[in-house]
Each structure stands twice: as structure tokens, then as C-alpha cells.
Image (cartoon, rainbow, N blue to C red; front, side, top):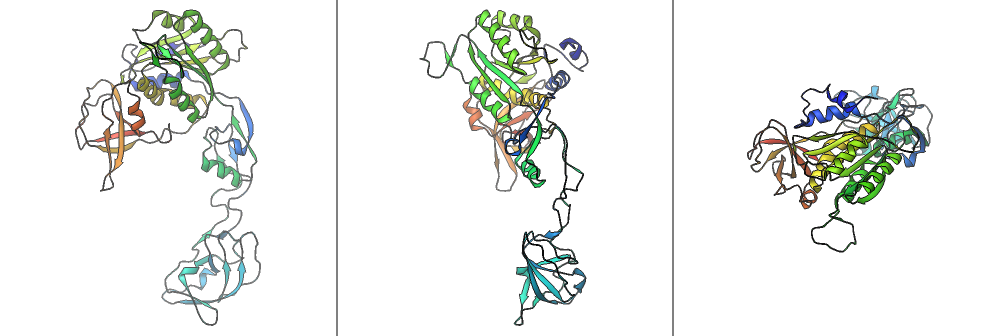
Length: 431
């Protein structure tokens, strides 16, 4: 199979000692293989899943011309510019009950929203835009309407035989409703991506453990759990593993046997225990990077070998994240999340970054991409403004709680001054 070295050799500007964020994305795009196994699930269970095949519409949506609102349906050709129109209601058409009959040029049919348009009629006037005369007829003001107004055409949303949703699309609430509008009770989706994760370190305490000098409670496992759950993958929590080679090795093999991807936090920087890095390399094809980004410079990426399990032709992908809480989250959002979506077979484009006016000075040196925690608000003028949460230490997890997005400062950008426009990667829809 292709090695990390052969992939890396094809990436422009690749430098293991100081890797550009864009090069990381290119590396991961070449390394990732989407899952292909699929399953059929009830429509109610399809939310958040990725479509395994194109969904072809077996019907027209809507299935017939219908009224877009409550009003009166009539012949649009009866409208005469500059003159009011008088019409006599002769019947009522209700939604779900098609009305059939002949309607003359000076007649109309009272119609409800969604009701089938009677044959020959093509225009609807809203009730509130009519005046009722003593004899029961209605008057439409001159030049108040155009022929064809307020009519929904058969198939204007989806045409029979057309692609309603393409393979690789994520089933959102809107997509779920669209599938239901086709009369479908089930849909083919790719199986859930299985992602195992664990934390490493002798200094890590779990919830409920007694405090110990020099130790900290493990926040990364729970932040990663939340990020993975929001992504819709099958989450495999392997807990916290002490810095003991045998335990780490056993956990890696267990993770590789059960998951498509493994995420660890801690143990990938140059200052960490050498046996962790050496073990990662020994158990697979793993590269250790220093990425030109802040926070989150150290990262390990590669494949883990599988032991005592069937070879399905796929390799387990490893993402070794830094141990600092904010660095782990930012690295996940900026690099790992897009890679996992690609593994899921999801072809949805990344959410657009918003443009906001910065209200403070952001100090930065060119040569690295920075992701600063930001708070986006709307000024009285309607423009979006953004400021940081304050100190940007990579261990300050509270700053991620207060932020609603990440201010993205590109690789070559220098310091930002008040009034400058910056890009913001919003958390909504991501975490």
C-alpha cells in the first residue's frame, strides 16, 4: 500500500519540521479513503447520516399544480390592465380534495393553501387583497396581480426521474423532510464511521478521582467525545492510558481492531516520553509533524497496523493530537474533522467563513496560521464585529466556552489592527 513518504513527496511545500496548514489538508486528502460499506435504515434514523447512493425522485414534487395561499383561483387571462376585476365565487377547493368543474371567465373558486388548482385556472388572489360586494362577488383592484401569481407548479421542486439528493450528501433536517416528501420510508446510507479515542499520560485523572499533586483532570476525552458525537460517528471511548508501554500497545491494538480511525491526545510533542512516539512508529506508518499553526503545533498522523483481526483492505487511521485542551480542540476542528467527514464519504463543502470587523489589536507574526478564540456580535449598524476572549493560552479551555468561533489569521498575515476585516470559523454547525 502507499506509504506516508510517497504521499508526502507529492505535496508542494511539504516540510516535516514546519508544515503549512494547507499542506496538511493536501496530505490528509491523499491519505484518506472513504468507507464504502452501506446499510439501509428507516427514514427516522437517517438524520446525520451520509447518503450511499443518489436518491432518484419517483414522483413529482409537488405532484400537481396547487395554490400557494388561501384565496380565489381564476383565469389569469381575465385580468385587464388598469381596470378592476369582478368575479363570482362558485365553489370551494379544499386541500386533499380535488374539485372538478367548469369555471367561466367571470367566475372563481375559493381555494385553500395546498389545494389542487381546478382545471384551466392558473392564478390565485389572496383573500386579503379582495373586496367582497353585497351580491357575494369579489373585486380585485386594478393592476394588483399578474397572471400565474400564487400558483405552485407541478414538479417545480423536484421532477420525477431527477436526482433529489446526491450520494455523499449529509442528511440534514431539510434533507430528511425532502426524502419524506418523496414518500420514502427508508434510505441507503454509508455505515457509521467508527472512531476510537483515548488520552495518555501519568498526570491524568478521571472524573471522581481524588486530586493528586501534579495531576490534572482529563478534559480532552470529554471535549473529543462531544465533537465526535456532533459529527455523528460511532464513538468508542477507550478511557485514559498511563505512560506504560505495554498498556499503550494493548490499547492501540484494541483501537485498531475495532475502529476506522483512532484519536489520541498527548504524547506527540518532542518533549513527551520517547517510548510513546517510538511505539506509534513501531505499530504502524506514522509521521510526526510540527505544523505552522497556533495553537496545536505538534501532531501525529498515519496508519496503525491491525493484529488478530480480519483484513478488510482498510487501514486504521491515527490522529495524534496535542495534549493541551484548546490545542486538541482547534486541531480537531481545523484538520481532523474535515478528514473524518471525507472518510464518511461526505461531500459537503466546509461551512463558509464569516467576515467580521476586528475591534482590537491582534498580534501575530507571519509564518504560521493562527486560530484565536473570538466572540462575534452584531453592531448597531448591522455589521459583524469580533473580539477575542482575552488570553489565548492553549490550556485555557474556558475561552472555548465563551467563544462562538475561531478568528482565522492566515499563514502570511501579520498583526491585525482595529477596523481590519478578518475571517471567522463559526462554531455553530461544527460543535
